[in-house]
Length: 470
Image (tube, rainbow, N blue to C red):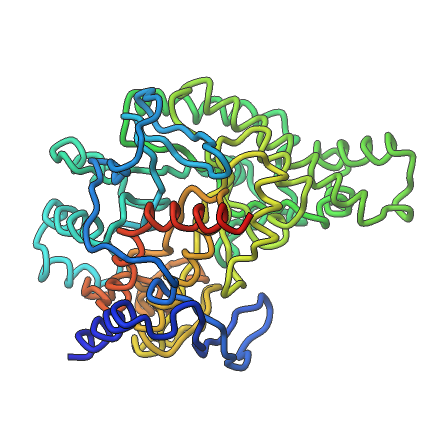
């Protein structure tokens, strides 16, 4: 009954134009790193029903990849690529159709005892789980699976089905090298390094990347793979310079490089400015992206290099984004802390990188899930209906930017507080499309479906609005 009321509300807004051209308020609790129990605030929110003049459809024509069959066809290369048409970037699928990457992160089975029992009760086998999950993902207008998904199960599913789940694979090159080298540790959401300085100046890192990338030869002809992430949320940033300079080992390659760089600038430790810090952060990023991109393309030149999922401060530093743009085909961004995507920031990403971007993590948590929602970086709202509003609002902002070629919802399943040995950012929060018994959050799903199936038309509509305003 509650879900029917949500759908009826959305239909009434669409049919009668109630509040079109305006926004409404959603009360949410923001997330700021290092600050807990922040007060709830009201945020202006816009959903499809409020777009004055846009008429949503209930069905669209897409191909096996979820690409738009109603738009002119582009040059087909047999693999995913990117292309700028006018003021908008697009992914172009292997058959030449324009594509927006609408995917779900972490499409895999839960590991807790509750998850395992629920899987047996609901699906019985892993094969039936991926069958049902792929069907659900497609029914909501999503087209694939993001990082930390069950790649083997998805590849097997794709091999026997006409409608596929596209794949975006994370390689963990720096974090993998760090585990082998020693000195890394677990942080909430990512890997920690000594002084938060990655080992990019180690000569052995380049060798390690080459060895790991050799495995990608097996993926070289797989048309269902969009591309690769080399790592997640690396600590590029203004603290890098002093961080490398103060590493305990005086012979550490990173410390030696930083000392040499400082000497080349003709300055002392006391003369370092914020400009120097940002320039050096760009140098670190440049070295990293060069090494990993060359290794990936050496063994698999057919698929896109999607970057390292910039987050926090790094995504706002010009030199870092510029470095990413020189080596990435698409710049991946984990975008938290903003209820509304910043038009200025998205414009900067496009100008700095000269490449399109994808948002590879975002989510909102609902208190009606029964979970405490104390971990993770997303906003918290009261209901699943409001999670749906937040999804539409955020993605509309992305679509309004001509530089965005996709978004990855984080994530498939809720955190399970009873799970053991999990990332400290994933302990007790309502991040999922499904709960810990694999039940779909329908009010959220309904809003996602409406947005996803209208995504191509919305992009065209926003482009027309922009043209009309010139």
